[in-house]
Length: 108
Image 1 (cartoon, rainbow, N blue to C red):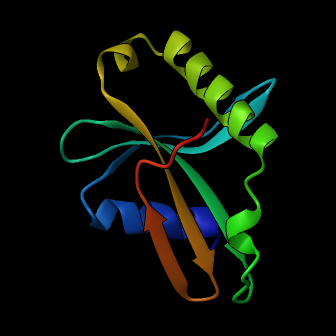
Image 2 (image 1 turned 30 degrees about the horizontal axis):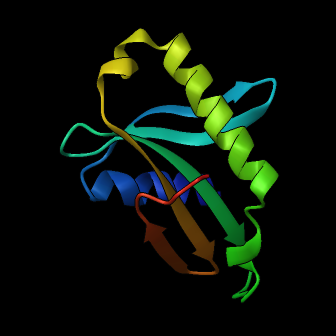
């Protein structure tokens, strides 16, 4: 099972509803877009490694964060309904059999 599919199942079991997978725009991609139980719009970045790695946490560079924010802005322009929701960025780290969910990660 792919890391994104594992994260999707994990989020569903936590009460999230995935509304879009792999939203692409010329500047980047958002792995998952979901809504949580409170109705917040959540842009989810999935990072994975086959084995435990202390370096995985350092793989979201400043240019990657800027692309994520720009792509999220494009998503909001393309999906009118999403403009009304509160939003946040989450990152889910997948290492071997372990998942770690970081909520409301700063992308600036």
